[in-house]
Image (tube, rainbow, N blue to C red; front, side, top):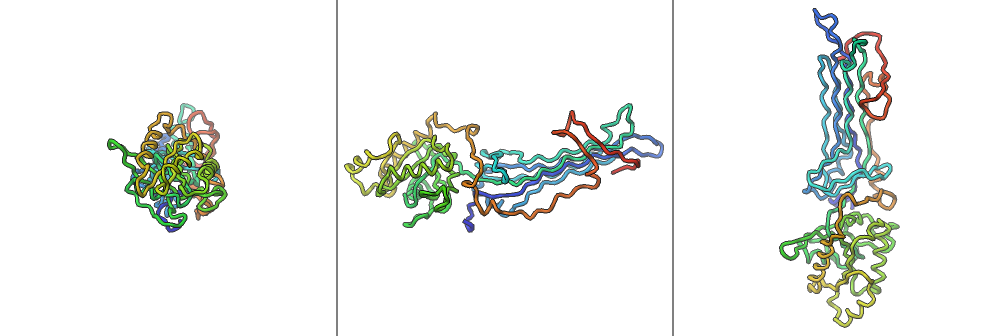
Length: 398
């Protein structure tokens, strides 16, 4: 997978900008000996923003951009001059990108719509200048607020392809052949296992100019949850699918047993996959006659719609598309973004080479005199008590 351009899992280090410090400046003029405080506010730090882009299909650009730092806010100055805000950094990601905390595996946010923007890390607020603190009893406040500190976080971006139907099956079950026959997608097809090494998407045409998206993922085998074969890495791409299409070849020793193995591996990956609509397709059925198909149907799993198909001859393909469209448009099968529960990252869902990636990161620099300010409270703003260190010398700080 190292040579592939399809990157669906990447770890990056993000840092928002810190707010600029407020100024402790006093107005000075030849004929105005006591002009009073006029220190301006510091500028806010830059945000780290995620933006959805429907024209992107991979996280490859972020593979070579591990450090993303926003600009710091500038300090205020005299004359109530505000400091310049730090530069915001916008990260464009494919629609369907989910963000997790790299340290804890906690789900943070997701981007599902084109041009949707999510503020991943908020820039620090700028500190207030000393002119905010003047009063009748304190006409020369020699203190100002420091800027709010930056936020630094390692995050994992995980791409989950947005499709309507997800293909699930053992290697060489005929998934890629079906996708190529129903859509314009051209996945690699060969007579050896694990031909498909990365997910593929295809748009399937239906009646009355309607269509739906079908996603093909690399085959899984028994024990995939323990790391056998390609493991469960690519199952993330069917978590959003409305329908799961299980494909078992007609020459399998026990169709029902293979279906149960596939379903069990999916449940180990994410228990919520058990609640999705399922359709069973018995592929390579052009070698069967009607009598044999009727006999085999008696031993198929109960309660699951099934169809015998052949991607080469087109047998049962129309009936399969009807079953899939009925399941996709079923009102009880509607998936709302707010109802999707993303499982946290754990040992089964992490990519080892990315999880062990070590950032070569320089420590954050601290502005001069910044450490001389202290504040108490949970938020930065109203109803917070500040403990300030006053300066003995009355010198302007510009």
